[in-house]
Image 1 (cartoon, rainbow, N blue to C red):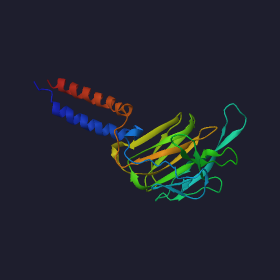
Image 2: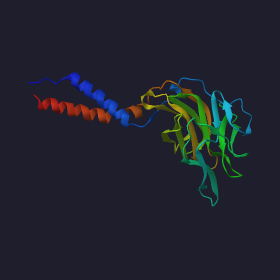
Image 3: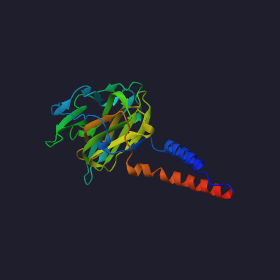
Image 4: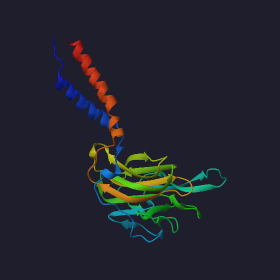
Length: 252
């Protein structure tokens, strides 16, 4: 009779973990408080429109990256006939190097002081002459690639929000869907800990106020994923464990 080999099971589970991780999303959501690093608070900014490319901390901010195509998405205002115009960066992709471009005058970036403990936040200015604050795109390039980032979403009312994470060569790491979020702190880390997030673009279709960002934190070391994300690995591990037990019994 052949005994069940726990070493074989452990090796099989390790292989399964690697395979499951490879099939998982490129990033996992993590607790904002788990990130190591100082927050960029935008407290030095004067309230109002921003011209050109902005540098805050060691991060550059602009409207879009060279290579991206800036389009317009029109979305009906809930319960009203009028439409709001939002920036759309879903066409094209950044060129290698992630060179930032500013928007046109009056349609770039802006700063707003909420008058609370968190103070000033950064927003993108949309393409429409009125009701444009918060409806525009924000793009950012980091001084060095990181494995995790987090920030505070402000004025979010549950509308569509997309965070696009890029490598320095312009390739897309992941489109992170933040739709349905309200004001909150969000954070994401690369699966496997790869430190290759070199920048991001953030767009939204969140009516009335759009969104602003505040308290941006970049972390070179990836924190532990949220429990919910870690649980996604369990089905694969359990399946492999059952298969290994069946094989052991068949060899008895």
